Image 1 (spheres, helix red, strand yellow):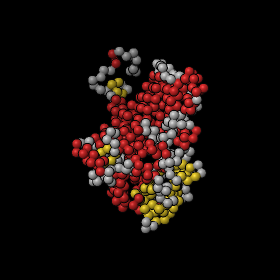
Image 2 (cartoon, rainbow, N blue to C red; image 1 turned 30 degrees about the vertical axis):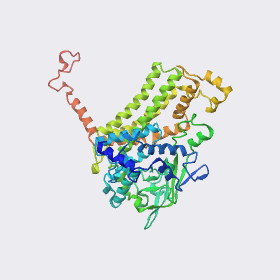
Image 3 (cartoon, rainbow, N blue to C red; image 1 turned 60 degrees about the horizontal axis):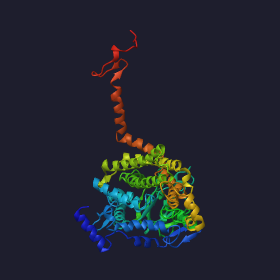
Image 4 (spheres, rainbow, N blue to C red; image 1 turned 180 degrees about the horizontal axis):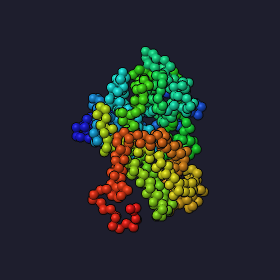
Length: 525
């Protein structure tokens, strides 16, 4: 930031007024709003105090706390562009220069380091899309004022917004707009807004969000009542969230943070989002037209590229964490000196570097889009989306191979170390190599098990493999982009240039020498 920008930000922080983002406490307080969240057969009164959500909520709250902390916020914040004189997270504004994208990279990385890359739906994830609303509000036609409003509000408050865009996997043989009893649709138009019913999946982290961005992604729609994009308040009457099993709650009830250090605080609970005649105010509507939904999904404002930009920065940090943890585990097992093991740890680091390079390529080859928004390069974005799932799958395979039984050669619970008659045996038989104690081994390996082998870990692999959609489609999109932007034509021209320099009689290029003086092959007369 420039000196002037720094002064503006410092004044905004000191004011404590509406020109700064929400604080950690304000975020937590906002979740206690009467929302309908259901888990284990009951409605949850307060997600911030329930064992299924409370530490994950606090992990997100920490992110908000860091925005106003002078010791941590230098790489996180920039002045707003809304005219309120405040500051915001650097990814929560339209980027117009390469430096803006570099600042956004630093801010995303700064937040992700606080959660070690294990929370994929931190508030900055949806900033990927929502900040495009401010690039060209006119794209949204009659709802342009709504787009401008939500751009301004999300930026100034740094709202935590989730998203739900996929239909429940029901009656997939039928067109989307023929499954009216399940898929989100408008039941009624009123003066106050749209009455909406239906469901969306999978609403990752929704119990801890303040709003959910709801859209349609998939086949073209034929009926207008299914063709809507809107912002849903999580406490609106008729909005319900049915949570999956909580890994955080399981860790709290049957283990401890020592045993499951990731599950116990980074579990982004996935939920089924249900609308039961919920009123969506007109000011929350962004699109209500089948053709416009498709145009939005085509991504002219760059939301897809921005999502890959954020996700790749997150995965970079996650792979940093995993590679560091594996390195420590190998020190404990004593296998770190073997060449084959070193090569496989190097492979994980290569994945990390590849992800980082693709993300930086998105910055350096970014192009100006509608309204002057600088959009990360689409080739690198799609290449990341296509290759990251395979890298993650291979990474997990490597860890299971080079750590092997070390992942389960462990005591059952932290309490074992607190039982005197157990402790002597554990200290003797569980100790590690290179002077590492049994406690060192247990703490490190339990963290690695939570990252690689636990139910939390399995869900993360499922997330990394599928959150972008079908890998096959991504490769088809890459081919389509290569055809549209001339990349494939250039490749074919390269081939034609080489092929044009020879024929059946040999080289046709005048500066190349044909082998007539040395050939042993007799040609017909």
